[in-house]
Image 1 (spheres, rainbow, N blue to C red):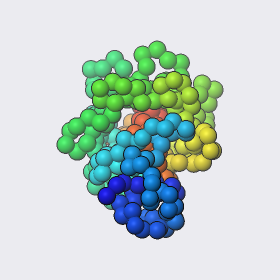
Image 2 (image 1 turned 120 degrees about the horizontal axis):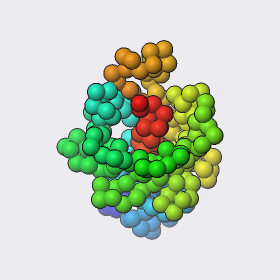
Image 3 (image 1 turned 90 degrees about the vertical axis):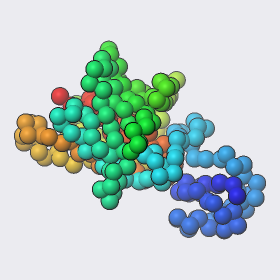
Length: 237
């Protein structure tokens, strides 16, 4: 039995005899059922041709649509990553003795599956998203002239823009857009925004972010990278 993916929602189609996607109900073209190669998968970003990293049940499972990131203040950026049922699905760990403020994204068993680093010298607060062995996945940059309604761009290793994160007032909420189609692919919300505004972080023991993803195509590493970059640049002190 070969794997296929729905053209509409990106869900895996395991039974090649079925005519409709079990997840969204969209028709499955006969050509896809009969002749599509087993390696066909959703793309990571606009026209990249890259397959998203996805392990069934893992932190970056392509079928995950909700993430809650709970940062522990006294750990300087470490914390838990939960699903919509408040169940742990991974962890983030900031390496304290790191010039580039490295944060590791880890599976529950401790396996490092991605890292994000701040560039040492950058006027735009650039962050590098990498694989555990150091291979560049993407770079995230803040638009310089975007103070009250911040904007972040995500570029591929060659500098081509894939996604744009457009913030609302003071950067507490963001929508992530595919720059090719203009479609919204995710929404980011800083859940404790009012406490930060009135207390100035004095009693802010945990920063909490909610990430809602609107497709089953976009690489989850990229979207979690956006959340960590926004936190590193705008909210970490």
